[in-house]
Image 1 (cartoon, rainbow, N blue to C red):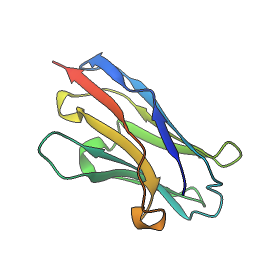
Image 2: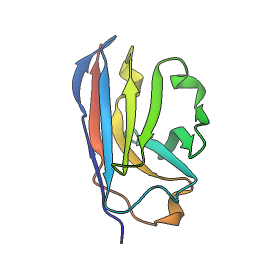
Image 3: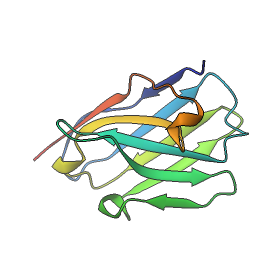
Image 4: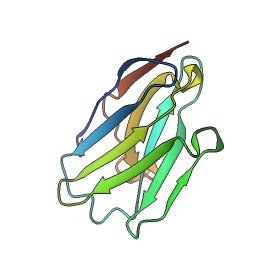
Length: 116
């Protein structure tokens, strides 16, 4: 079973930046699409950014222009650069394959809290 370890979260003021990392215990080279998901309190988990192995990326409207997803296949690591953070970005952030059922497991996530 793959192990996913997210890191880089924290408490930041609105307008600030964070860079999240996600290390996978297995190769992500064969995974066509990797993504970052988030779950805010009382809400369903949502996919906010995805990146294909060919380099195409996509973002949910609420983060477009502020978040950038990238991957390093040699390190089996996924990144999410988050700029101009807003209080509504507060959530636990997870990485996974897209769809997540490819691995059917989740890491512990990393908490991002944006204060106003």
